[in-house]
Length: 468
Image (cartoon, rainbow, N blue to C red; front, side, top):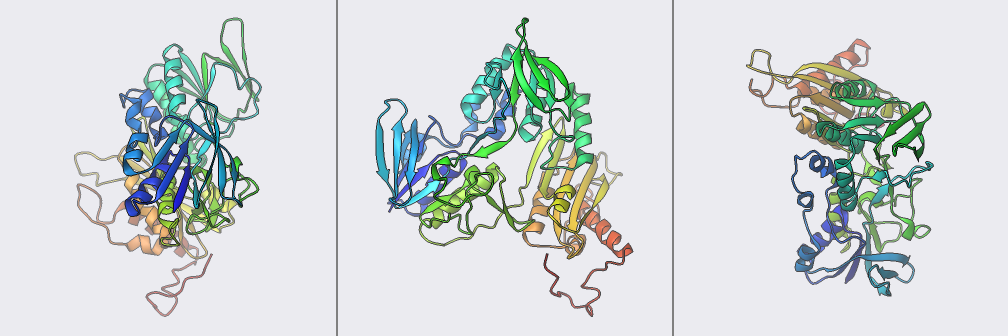
């Protein structure tokens, strides 16, 4: 069988390695526009502030390693057309300009995403840069060394992490966000306010509710950034306004969502059974809502890529879906999230509520401990957990993983309130903080008269809970 993989960052690399591990005799060809594969863009900020010394350490594979595994790797080759009906594609050698046609039995689309380029006047100014791939990371690193004042446009994960990195390297940083909160996909307004204050305390100027409308230069050689609420100047701007899937090659040939992300089934298969899609080019099956969503994260890409490599040989292993669990470190704090925030849960139509735990991660009688904030979001109708966010100086990211499993397994606040967790004063209280925040939710619902259905069903230990 001949398998062609288009694109080789996380999803494409893992798809190829999985195929060649399980079926080493498979004819695997990879087409990649860049000279490198498997770049961890989430490590760019660590390189910019010197925590990682070499940007090349952000690669976990290479064209040579994929070739050694048995793949035919063609870098600097751009696929310009796909004909799904005839199972063929046209490819341009970006160095020679030669055009060739190739054919496949199965196709894996791992074309990833690009930074959303908003329709802003002057977006192509030399002092305006993007941040996602290796080449862009090299460029912004070089540019930042010669410029003191840096504006970050967009306050998602990448924008917020870049703001911290540049503050740590002595730059004057402006973080410009069009919304009234930052990190809006991951936290609610209360936690956003906390992170905003943390950024401000460390020298970052955070500008909310300001949509950038143009970039121009002035007589002093500065970059002028015009927004809906004032004008600002900087030496350099880095645009971090989200991502859009690279799926134009299959437009009109497979089903896509409103973002242009390719819709997949439980086996990461598109509406064309011979084409699989994975990573930022495709949707995810988002378990908190039970619906497809566009969530471009490396964690999704590596899993979907491996599954594509498995399922090109048949419907072998189902995709479990995702809770979009993620975490970041920001000025000595861990911020972690999974599932839905309360605002997103309500917008999705759930009868949702949340409780907030404010305490410490281990007993106060220990030599040291740290404050911990947890927001736990749940569905009042069936008491299932929908999401959680964590903030502490302590490393609480693994607790987000635990809640991710609870959402995956459709657990309730009643389950989490009493689930078995270790106790040792070095690590937690007799009831772990996850138990405690769930007990808060149970108590809140009990006071409302919304009792645990297990207690009102003749003490049936495991009644069938209502569906969403």
